[in-house]
Image 1: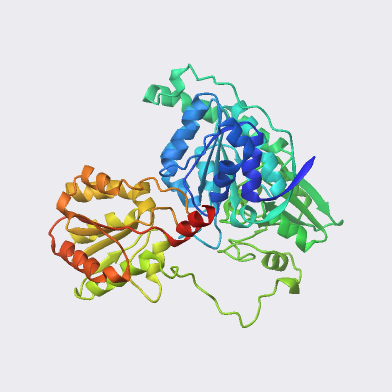
Image 2: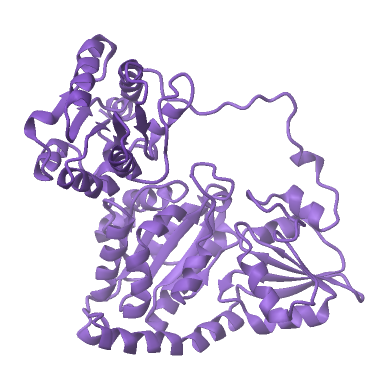
Length: 529
């Protein structure tokens, strides 16, 4: 077979294309972004016309992918872990409707929060929805699993969740490539009863989902991705359950006198876990993320059986695993090669020199200083760096779109002025509904949509609302006189500060749109001319 050096994300993308993918639906979010970008630039995907345009948010992506599945085609929907929160309604209900063409939901988790606001384990979502979960340990498995997951999805008529973590998504390995399959034929589902979730249909569909659990569990027991291997001989062996990428860290430590269950397909293979427990005197659960398996194993082997892992402190309770902390948990000395470098000072990220967001914060800080009780509610994007020195402008940053609704709630409680700062892509992702709430309630807030004409934080992808923001705000009911556009440049500082001051003094909803293209995307365009 041909081999290619691929990121984990790229292996997933190429695996999907070669498995007969017809459409990928996604909103950019690290560490998942490269999957869609790879498909957008792949020659075979372009030749076949595989749909790969970015979606407005993860919910619309999930629903569009479900629509493609309805038509009999294979679809992939990609997001980072917090995107699972956004698409949860459609995701959970897709397990009840079932699917027609194969449907994979790819969730890229970010242990240690390298570029995220929380540590969240998407395996909980798969268990909650009662669907199969795949968790590859290597780039090769990531490639192979996509095809297997599509096949399982179509066999069970259920979506499949595939969970990866940052280290797998953003590391490279050689991957053996198989021959591409043809796309599925166009074959829309003609059975309306399981797609129309009226209570009578939903109850029947939910019962069907429950009845499939035995088959789903059997698929995990028989999966080639879940295997027990012996490392050493003798009695009193340690049992190790190594999930996904953590299996590599266990192998790196080379434990002796251990029996290892490599776990990469869920639900957990209960029979294999009982076999491991009977062969060993104790079990160590090694999983990157939250203690999902560690908690469940206790229900399988009993409360008296000795189990260690993240809950017991044998492994760190937070952050991503690494070869050092896994080796220590296995009673080994960490390798000197992984020791932290000395005298290295942390370098927090900062807004690019010349970025328009800098001019926005300079103006905003100047005006806000005139109001002792001013509060500035931030949002998710590269402009979140306005919370750091030298600006220190932002008083909150919680989730996508929260700036507007938190500003509204604060204003309802008496905060004045209540100012929201949100980016262009985040506004269309989940800020528009908050603006509609504010308009309907005549909230006394000032909203700044800092528009750099792209989704800059994740690499400059298309932004859904580019050149539409004034029309969107007017359509949602903002008064025309209070939708203002400025150009964020130092020479325009007086105009910008006056505009902000005037809109703060207006008793109602006002929107200011500082608009200047991201320097990085502008430079990229110039290079490509």
